Length: 227
Ligand code: MD6
Ligand code: FE
Image (tube, rainbow, N blue to C red):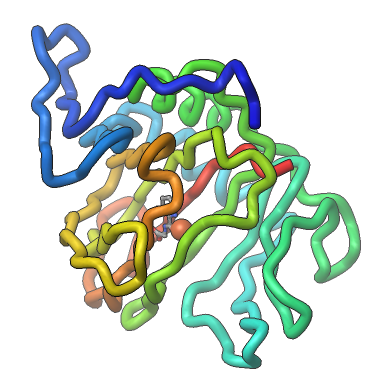
């Protein structure tokens, strides 16, 4: 655990206006979760250029689960570590298994956004070393899971949504716990950690549509301190 990583216990839905007197709280989200609506809108164009460069260097691919099923979401990474999956399991690796070269460096515009979002949500000292890039085409989904492959579970996960909207399911500590449905739209950033770090979550099948900047899919970037 990283002792510097601390949560101030800020909860809920924080609006666009940095000068707001009090953040709009949403008790539905639970402790140590913040949904920063539109947080990335101002930098969206620069972020998308950076993502394109990463995808050119380390192309998106649909990974195999340890159980042998092909994931519907296409993935790649940037940063010192990248998340991957195959018959041997889920893990973080320093090299892209497709080509055995290091993952592309994490672009400063991405890292900076993640650090500012974490701070805004009450997590100081966030030092992401991994950024997983997910592309959802229509019908792609992510079943309920916990994020527990990271070494430092004291650090939050910062999740940026771009392009088509999706419905995010936020559950509890047990797979069978009830879930709340959160619509995630272009530019939204979801931050969670602390008491919510190991909650189950997933994404419903993406509805077809067209986004004027991103096109016919959704991109999701998750930043973590993995190693
Ligand atoms: C997604 N996100 O939004 C998938 N995990 O496409 C995740 O699995 C996720 O958004 C941990 C924290 C935030 C997330
Ligand atoms: Fe996750």
